[in-house]
Length: 304
Image 1 (cartoon, one colour):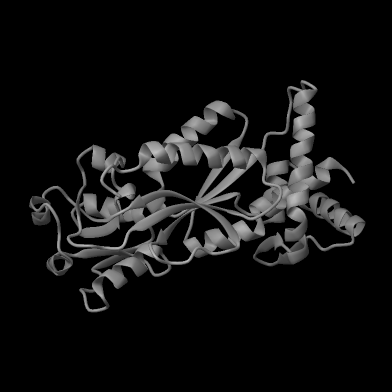
Image 2 (cartoon, rainbow, N blue to C red):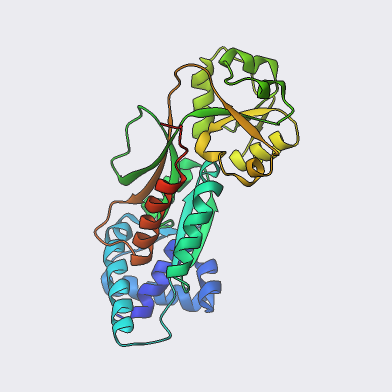
């Protein structure tokens, strides 16, 4: 067994495709495929499930993944102790729902980069269900997801609450609702409402908020970032957790503003998740810690 075989299987798992892994590793796809198959024969286990849509870790592969990561981290530590300058640079993959991105993600990545200049961080925007599936399969190292207050945390992940926010109505500064200190749920009927597509937590949140009897969406979009851009263009208003808006570049520039919803409303939690495993790449653990530290500085003062 060679170290590069483990590097290759980790790359295929992370990228979800033999072709993409071969491109990143600068190998031919047949050579990579044969190397992976040789490792599978040596271990007596099918590590990958090969489909037309890509390659994912098999159930047996997921059981062995923590040990593979542990070996690779140990090799990196050995190289570091030996003073080797050409260490293999790791990649950390982060899946994030769009409502979590700018105000928290950017400062966290900036801090992480200072300590890990050789480590590439790949940020992938996705729906929560896709993020959690990729975490289980080894495609993502960390996942930033929203979680509704009162819902149970899934047992298959280690979950760390980063932020706790109140729902706010995001609007253009010229919107009549901007003159109010707080916006009642019934007042949303008087303006075009921009919602998240089905599958996003904020889609479910708004439907729960309206009790199934509120106005239908004038628009629906794929994530909070596009929703905020539509608000900035004056197309309507949207409902998001305050931590997704406060400090956003559009809010800082005055292109959007926000007001709290009136009354007692459930809160939205921003949660950092990773799979439960004995071995997690050191770079992923370090980025996890950076997110926790950054969240303490990012918390919206009146969100509690």
